[in-house]
Image (tube, rainbow, N blue to C red; front, side, top):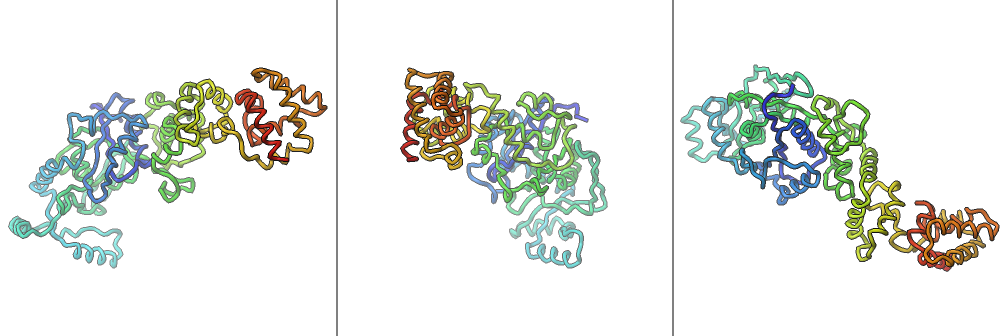
Length: 486
């Protein structure tokens, strides 16, 4: 079903804020489709709605794409053969093409006031019509009437002249054959009263002039497709291949929205999610390779991706799955990668003023690797590797602290003092000797010792912790807890 001509796809966001997870999926599927097929991925900024424009949004958008690894071939600040890539810089092009539609009688001037349009809409609602639409009131104005109104400075828009008796059919790559009745399509506005084109006109003109072969976008744009097809036909152009992606849903099957949680890519980046995990997760929101494989790196996604495997039904946004993928991708990182990432995290934490050697961080990573899902958890869950505990977990205190516990810990401290720089094995020998001499089980030492050195009752093996923090800190922490729990 793939067109034989050069594959060119585009991601065309509006600079109205942060990138929504759903928008990133659209960009990702376009990117993967282009890369898999040796095509080109274009970034175009649809900024003609100046009322919604947010300063800095374009820069943030590009920064986010760079972070995720979606490198575009043509677009802002890169150029290409089909620019400009900001719609606000293409107004002359839109004017020329809207004039063509007016000459061909495929579009017409409309001078109706907001008051008339409101009254028309209210009347149609009273009649309980299926939908409200423009009544073609200005369709048959003569050229003289039009010129007179324009010369008087009367505001106007340009509308598409839709034939209500026409049936619009097209074959969607994902959904198969789709049909709309012309009766359901309004004489949409193509050019607003401020002279700026609407999304529909600019979108079609740009896609055609930029030689876009496949329009891959969210399901919410499906009702706009017949309007776009009518525009292609009005210009006498062939249409691209349309592919509409399934909706993203919350676990309760409502549409994914800000009201039910984070939806901006930046939210997840700021929370410490790895870009590899986020891309892997988003790729699976509506697509699978047809097997049970869920863990993918970027190259594997490019190799496996196909529009033929995109689902029609909505995709559930499962945060638990994202967390699992983040942990899996984190564990695949080399020690050197994790050290570098951990240093960045520490620099942004309360430990920013402290110095830790690569070797020390490597031992912490080795102890915690299987216990964390995020970089920050190395120093949040394993805080005792970076500071002395100041408080002690209540269940831990109740479980392991008895009247004779201080004597046991003091004996253990004496044993390890005999070693110059005890290894993991020597810490274990000291504990066994303490248990033997005091005629107690190992558990009577392990639990209070863990509490002393970490402040909590869970975590890596006790001998891993002791060998990492070393003899001096172990003895200091034993003395500290004995003093605090007198």
